[in-house]
Image (cartoon, rainbow, N blue to C red):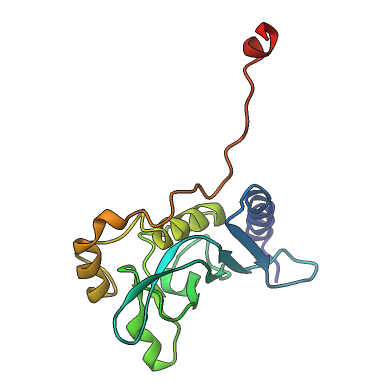
Amino acid sequence: MSDPVFEGFLRQQLHDGVALTSQSDLLDLTPLEIGDRPPRRYLAKFFCTGLVSDQKGNVSEASEFHVGIWFPSDYLRRVDPFQVLTWLHPSNVWHPNIGVGLCSSGTPPAICAGRIVPGTELIDLLYDLFEIITYRNWAPHDGLNPSACQWARNNQKRFPTDSRPLKRRALTLDVREMSES
């Protein structure tokens, strides 16, 4: 059965997501469903500087991160944030808000992007994810990865890991400046 309100929401998310992607050098957003209905699943690839940790605990920079985004059919009424956002790549991401320890059970790492309310738009989720990856947003004392929390508290001078904006800044020309030239 079709829900016209939810389908309208999904159409708007696709439109806005495509628009943001076209204005970003750091984001590739791929709808994962093709058909007559607007997609509910996306693959977001971020090409920005974030952090990973090797088996020895050494933290280093990485430049590509993948997240799955899914809008369940009841998304406009209730939200389980751990169902909406799924960390996909790299599995050794190093961030207080990403619970890499959950990987050992065979499930992808969990992402804590803060409070996600019903109907949170795709664009807001993408900005939240970008801010997490680049360490603009992180939980210093209440994260999913306690080791990364401690490391981040001791290494705050490294943040943000990438200072570029997700969306390119629009070039604006002051008409007065042009006429004076």
